[in-house]
Image (cartoon, rainbow, N blue to C red; front, side):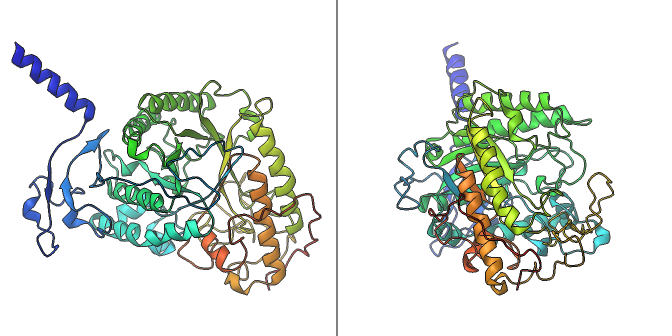
Amino acid sequence: MVLIIIIVVVAVVASKKNKSSSSSSITDSNGNCKDSSIPTTAQGTYLDPCTWYDTTDFNLTYTNFTVGGLPIMGLNSTWDDSKSATKNTPPISTAWGSYADRPARGVNLGGWLSLEPFITPSLFNYDSSLGIVDEWTLTTQLGSAAQSTLEKHYATFVTEQTFVDIANAGLDHVRIPFSYWAVATYPGDPYVFRTSWRYLLRGIEWARQNGLRINLDLHGLPGSQNGWNHSGRQGAIGWLNGTDGALNANRSLEVHDQLSQFFAQDRYKDIIAFYGLANEPKMTVLPVSEVLDWTANAYTLVRQNGMNAYVVFGDGFMGLAKWQGQLTGYDGLVLDAHQYVIFNENQIDYTHTTKVNYACTGWTEQSEQSMDVSTGFGPTIFAEWSQADTDCAPNLNDVGIGNRWTGTYNIGNSTTDVLTPDCPTKNSQCECTDANADPSQYSATYKQFLQMFAEAQMASFEKGWGWFYWTWVTEDATQWSYQLGLAAGILPQKAYAPDFNCSATVPSFSGLPEYY
């Protein structure tokens, strides 16, 4: 009887810790990988370091330790949170303080662990007849080559130098979009299982080394929460919707159960500042009450698992004013809004002067309204924005789809199609060749507009809890990125120009053409 009790207690403790104690060195005296030291059942799997494309900064000791069912991937070493991103921000080990007083100034690593065709067009360079438009169709097409292809991308698109450069630009936070297949895959999924997980963990360590705090962003949820390519699968929304809507909602909670257990570890308690539940759920289509219920359940779950970061939920494109009085009583819950003019038929045609003025007035008003609980939700961040002026970038509106700027945006939906030029002049001057040209060749006037537009948005979003630019880098040097903006002199060199004054008179920009 005593023996049985002891066995049961040990089993329960092991279950709660959810970790195994198997580890062994996998390198010989010359540093070469030796498969013979790895258990046969693990050889060739994602846990086998001998199969990894890049092992830089990983502890090359085989381990199958898990927390919340997720592997530590060798990152069981000590850590140092003494670094500050800038001279004006505290080290990671010291509390940030009020984001209302010291707003986040961050950037996204879009297109890295959650693919987007406009960010990495080379990965989607297929004959249009094959219909390779998102990560689902890409990994289906690649088949057995998907793992090696995507891991090479993960290892080369973002590197240790990326985080050095981000800190040197004067930024202090990094938002890392990743998708559910970093944690789990389900029957029928073609996605690459857990390879991106290892790179997510390494990215966090590189951020730590540079004093950068993390906004964890679950960008793609089971079934797709918005039907857009950056959710993993373009088309129908299968999250909280359709035949498997409830199933996918529960799967998403299971993913958060594992993630929140893992990131509640002491190693991550200071560096994870924001924990995102679902990027851009399309609440203009989804049943609002069900999204609210799911959000409340997800919040409760991650808090019960010990996650102490601010929990982030998306505004669902409903407008910030509609969140007043919603989801009250959840401490540390933060509303996230993404502000762009280029995807809205009634804003992309603003003149350059109007765009700057709108950022100074319209978005500032929305920020202040949202931060006030008597008129809005309360704590609000702006985790995506850009000073992009057009939607001309190839693949920006999905692979092979045209753009609003020139009136070629045709997805077969009469309510959203834009079939006549929608730049400010509404005529043949609405062209993309110059807009997509090398930004270093832009005219001084156009660069002035771009910088003012960026600074006006920064000033506006700092009325909330801060901002995260979309995105740090793209594969094509003519497409918008923060890194490119710095190099071309169209973004401030230290993240923000404190002397920018939205109350000042904005120059009367001439309109189009203005590029050269």
